[in-house]
Length: 98
Image (cartoon, rainbow, N blue to C red):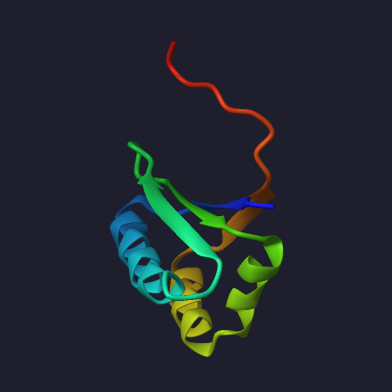
């Protein structure tokens, strides 16, 4: 079952770009892990939020990130800037333009 993980961060506006860059550095490691399907990083217009959206083949593959020392070291850099409020989801519907 494909899963989508949303990491939602509330961040001080002056640190938003630092967080985006830290997430991108971590993504360079995570993208090589089994089960990773892709990701996107979004920065709110007001500077106070960052959303990291990633796609995985399974919840087990996503959970394996916690066992990767390099990925976790980079995650600690992110978490020093802001703590995520993660949401793990499965798709229940899709809508495309007519």
